[in-house]
Length: 316
Image (cartoon, rainbow, N blue to C red; front, side, top):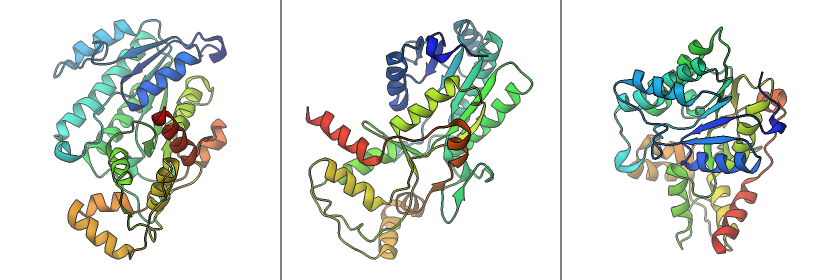
């Protein structure tokens, strides 16, 4: 059993502590008085001795003595631009094999709970479906496949063991200093130009960073947290709503005009590829009702809250 979270005796390790989610999570845990250790490549705590992962596991096991909870965020993220096609073997090494070795080290060291941040992309790329925990995994790229294979290995490692496994599958995480897809969208929004998205009615589930942090913190100590959980804000958003909210938060008019959605898809498919155009303009829906019902988690922040707060911070 985990110690009472309110006693501030739950000793945590956060891997990837210098990343977008990791930095914010460490700040949150330190504010709540959790004893937390940051693991990054820079401080040499989380170094992968490729290809000899056995050496990594032995070192990690020594470092994990007297730790209660590992929150595993480190990994090779979904890449864009010139780095879009990282070799599949890199994803396997970093996101699958190293994750499994870390879990084995945690189990051997007596860690009580292992929290793995996976991705909702293991279901696929969206479309005319609302994904639930009953949906089959159908990952379509190397990143999603590596996360799915990591989940499977973790389940095997903890089966009939003393360590509990928590898997969280978020969709796109947004907030100040977000990277990848959301950073590109922010650049588009800040252009001093009207944009042709007013007629777009796509629906995409995303999650605000603060809402994800609430869930991770809850899963540190909730007695029923062992399991796999989906998460998203209370409502999905269209691309038009996202752009309008960003611009309004920064004191600007939305400046959106209508353009036939079918032509938008053709245009973006021509310049981005069909797959990336669908990610931007298509639907991605997930059903988080089980997470809310079983854990009592409810996302408190809205997209407008996040964008307004970010605009105020940048104006200081």
